[in-house]
Amino acid sequence: MLKTPAGEMDLEKKADHWEIVRPLRARGDDQKIGDLIAQVTTARIQRFVADDGGDLHPYGLAEPRGSITLFGDNDKSAGRMDSSRGEQGQMLQLGAAPEKEKDQVYVRFPSRNFVYTLPKKVGEILNTKPNDVRDRHLARIDKNILDRITIEVPGKSKTILARKDENWSIANHNNTAANSSEVQRLIDTFSNEQVTKFVEDVASNLPKYGLDKPQLQLTFSSFASENTAETKAGEHPFVTIAFGKVDGDNVYARVGEEPFIVAVGRALINNANADPLQWQELSIFKLKPEQIHRFSVVTDKELSLTRGANNQWSWIKGSGQINQTNVQSFSNTLSALHAVRWVGATTPQHGFDKPQLVVTFTTSPDDKASHKLTVGAPTGDGMWFARVDERDGTFIINNPDLNALKLPVVQPPASSPSPTTDANVSPAASPATSASPTRQVIPSPVAAPTP
Image (tube, rainbow, N blue to C red; front, side):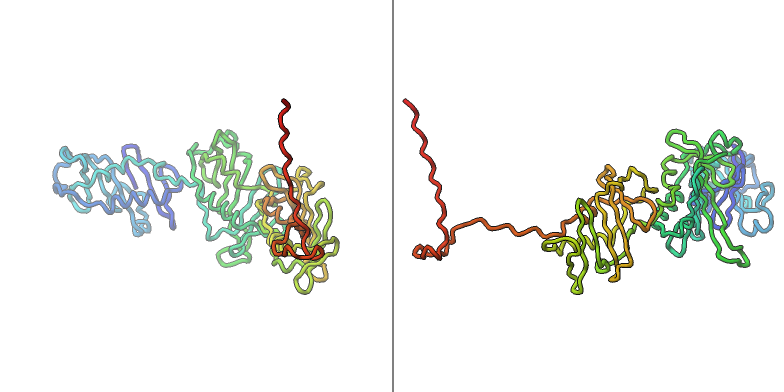
C-alpha cells in the first residue's frame, strides 16, 4: 500500500500478476511494481540519525509526507491488507530531505524505533501515480491454456481457429488446416500490443467510442473436450477484446468487462482477418516430385506427358524431344507449391476465365487422384492469382513459381553448324574427299574521283 499526498494506492498480487485495487481496479505492470518494491527492500541505510522517541518534526516525520506498507502472505490471511491505521504489515514512513544531504531522505521504520536516511530515490516513490504502474498491454493472453480464437465482424460469419497440440485449424470451415505460423503471429501481436492512451476509466458512454456495436471482436478461450472435476466440457472464454471507432492513427478498444476504454494503434485490427479462407495454410500441395504420375499443361496449346517405369517422361499429347530437366523442375515446383498468401473468395477480377496456365495432374498410376491448378490474372505487384479445385478461395503465387511451371517441355532442335574449312584437310586431297574451299571475299576497289 502506498500513501501519498495525492491519495492512497493499494496494489495486490493475485496468482502471478499484480493488480491495482485502489483508487481504481486495473491490471498492474508486474515489472514496474516489482521494481518499485525492490527499491524499498534492497535500499541500504545511509545513516542512522536518532531514536524515534524524541521530536520527529526536524525530520518531517511528525506528519510524514507518505508511507509505504508491505504486506506478506500472513497479513493477507489475517485480513490486514487494507489496514493503514495500525502497525500491521511493514510500514516505512518518509519525511523530509536532510539540509546537507539532498540525495537522501529521512525515514522511520516504526518496528525498529529509529530514524535513519535512505537514498532519495526511495522518497520519489511517493510521486507514483496509478497510471505509472498500470499494465499498458492491451490484454493478458495466457498462451498455455489458449485453444480457441473467435474473430467476429458484423454482417459476416465468424471465424473460429482451433488448436490441437501445436497445430491450428479453421473449426468452422470443415477443420481445414490453418496457417499455424500466422495464427501464432496473431497471438503474439495481440499479446504484445500496448495501449497508446488510457481514454476513460469508467466506460459509461460506449456509443461515443463505437463500442456499443464493435466493428471487430476477438475472443480467446480455453477448451475442454470432456467434463472434469474442475471444468465443464466446452469453450471457456477468458479474454474478449472489442474494437470501436477509428480516431486518426488510433482505434478505441475495451477488454472484456473491464470498465476502461483505451486507444491502440489502428493497424492492429488489420491483423485479424475475418474471412476464414484467409487463414488457410500456405502449402497448396504436399507431395514428392516422383508422386506426380501424369500431367497436362494448357497455355496457348495443350501438352500431356506420363511417367514411365524408368522415371523417364513420354508423350501422351505432343511431339518432339522432351526436355527431361525442365520437366523435373516443373515437378519439383508443382509438388511443393506454396501460396504467398490467401486472398479470400474467388471473384471475376482474379481472371480465371482467361487463365495464364492450367495444370491438371494425377498422383497414382490408375489416375484416380486428380488435381487441378489454374493461374489467372496478375496481381499488379509481380505475382499471380491462382486456385485449386480441392480448396475454396483464391491464393497468390510468385513469379518464379509461375515461370518454373511454364518452362518449355520440348527440347529445341539442335542448330546446324555453319560451313567452315577443315584445317586438317591436306591441300593435295582429292576434290571428292576434301572440304569445300572457303570463299574469299575481295574488297572492291575504291573508285577514283572524277577530275
